[in-house]
Length: 472
Image 1 (cartoon, helix red, strand yellow):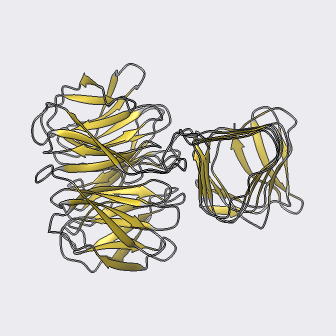
Image 2 (cartoon, helix red, strand yellow; image 1 turned 45 degrees about the vertical axis):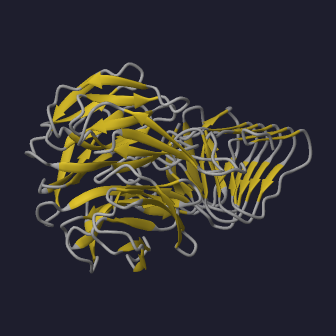
Image 3 (cartoon, one colour; image 1 turned 135 degrees about the horizontal axis):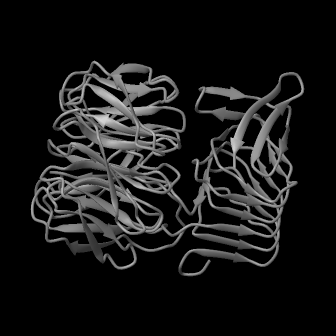
């Protein structure tokens, strides 16, 4: 492994018996990854995961210590609230800042794009694979930003002031997290059209949300309930959080569990998405402790609002490691992972802060031989495979996932392929054990064979006929 975390092998195979994060695999023969979770890709796997600036990607394994860098932004107090990563740049959503800020992750240099929406404009952002979406707080408009040139398109939402705090992308639609809006709002990114769903959780209801590959989760602020939303029809399931009012500020998904970010809660809370069961873990910080979180493929990170530390959580046992930082009170609102570093979004902090733990790096995977992935879920966006792909674990990606192969694609053990676009050479055979369709909320089970043409991957069953379609 070189210093940048690239793994280069001219022959043989790689077998991993612990969790694998890779900046770049370059392999001329078989690549076998078994037994542990694998994260890899060149785009976001969980886009806008906590609704206030968490975008997960992949990282490498590099020895070293945590490094911290600060970058002055010059926008004063109440500057930014959330943001996102678009695969190349960090974007900060302006609260009182006069512009939307684009950050070059390589050196922290900043470019500002004036938005003209006044003070308290936005709270949260997400990336849909093409555009940045800014969640309106005081702004009367939802704003779509083209990251190629910073140009913006406005869409009136009609939900009043302090309407939303957070935005979540589910692979198809944008969801605006309601704060004082009486409605959860779904946005079609193709034209900005909006659909409203009444939530009945009162004012100051939610801050932040996330997508778990199947459902949208709304993080409770003044609401007494954590809310799970079915994307296909907007129906909602509530789960009492049993904490004091104003307990949480954002949430993130780690591939298995939802984590609620403690604001006034004395505990961080882990949620089982299958049944809403909650486990609490004391964090030992002051009230108004944290202002956001993200998942880096291995650990959950909490960024401080009034806490004196940022905190790393091991999801397997919820053990916590603290790292001191002194940026004053009301310091940060939002955390963004870019595949290499975690960025703390400055609210009252004078500085944007990046911390780079060991074991981070930029992603891609290339192999001229077969790719064999086994074990638990594989979060994948960005494969270039010249041989067959064989998986005995779930594959989770987004609509904008790139999977390129000129060999067979074989899915084993009844596991799932979650909605992923596929680029291919015509004539490739795809064999999938189960396909989850987020539009219908159904899982389909082909008889291990499919039909492929130039534009469509069709999933077939000998008894039921065509079961599902992936548009390429």
